[in-house]
Image (cartoon, rainbow, N blue to C red; front, side):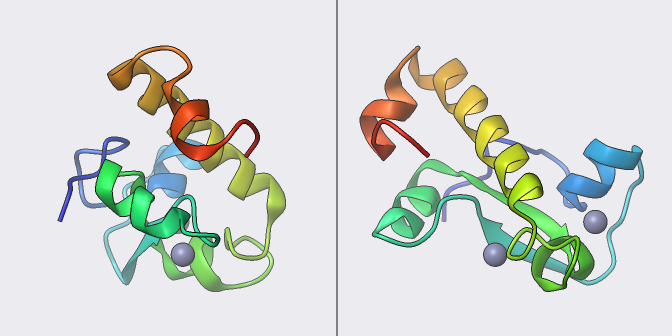
Length: 98
Ligand SMILES: [Zn+2]
Ligand SMILES: [Zn+2]
């Protein structure tokens, strides 16, 4: 299993990002790109984060329900990926638009 390229600590990525809170209870792993074969690529390249249940799979905040939160993760993933692999590499690997 690849390691996440977006976070070092095992805590909810969005609790940290939005509220600067450290949430470690009830974490679930989320692959930032999923569907259409992207989940395997997410796994391979470490584009995954730990999320608390509310931020993962629960309306209205969960990334599987809130397009805005999903967008934040996708943009962070693109930034981290291009930083690591070079400008434009995210688009090359995952297709032009996310
Ligand atoms: Zn959270
Ligand atoms: Zn998920």
